[in-house]
Amino acid sequence: MALDHGVIGIPSAPRRKAWTSKDALLYAVGVGAGQDSAQDELAFTTENSADIEQLVLPTFAVLATQAPSGRTLGDFDPAKLVHAEQAFELFGTLPVEGCVDVTSTVTAIEDKGSGALVVSDAEALDAKTGAVLATSRSSVFITGEGGSGRRGSPASAAPMPDTAADSQVTYSTRPEQALLYRLSGDRNPLHSDPKFAARAGFARPILHGLCTYGVTGRALLHELCGSDPTRLRSMAGRFTHPVYPGQDVTVSIWDTADGIRFRTSLEDGTTVIDRGTVAIR
Image 1 (spheres, rainbow, N blue to C red):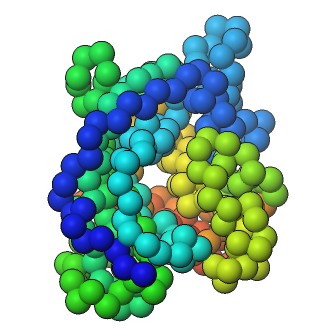
Image 2: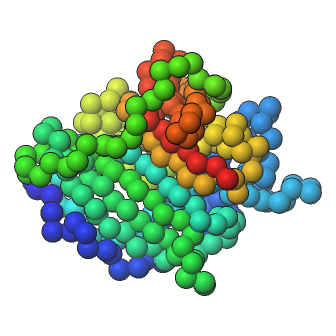
């Protein structure tokens, strides 16, 4: 088995990606919106509530910038692939119903010894205007695919603050959260099939990293932006530990001189998203 390093730096052909009001609603519920009655999220979870206009969660940008590239990375065991990092930046407000042309590029395949880190960038252009609506950067780690000798540069994310967080908020996930989130497009059996999860070394199916990312994004939206999705410009974080459906996650936020930082952790203190950065308008 080997990865194809020949794909590095070659943009894919533009691929059309469209979504509907229903897709935006399903995504919002899939990342836990509407579970907490203390948090009014009808704007993200309904389209026909009186005097409430439907809105789209900013983290939906990670789906808006995903489209099949038509290319493969090579031959590897999909059970050995895990999401490692995710970032997005918005250049406008995500519409309830949208259509974009997505171009993606593998920018690096880094040899990490025990495996390979594959980094990809994507850009979504509004299909009508041609304007950039969103960009994203994601990386996946594939165990057992190291050994190419092509070492990447060290990650540039700054260390986290060592002071107490300025604010913290805890959100719940549901036992069936992964089964709901997968309906937004990621049907990887790692999140639904116990036998497949066991092949990957997990006791049971784990929550999608992007679901945990979306739950975290909700916390940042409500804590930092007054629940106004037009104010959350960008978000990035590194996945460091799996979350099992039904576990609670706590988002800790620091407002530093170098920008806003966040970390997401489990009840026992285990970090699940680290070195988080977020920019607001």
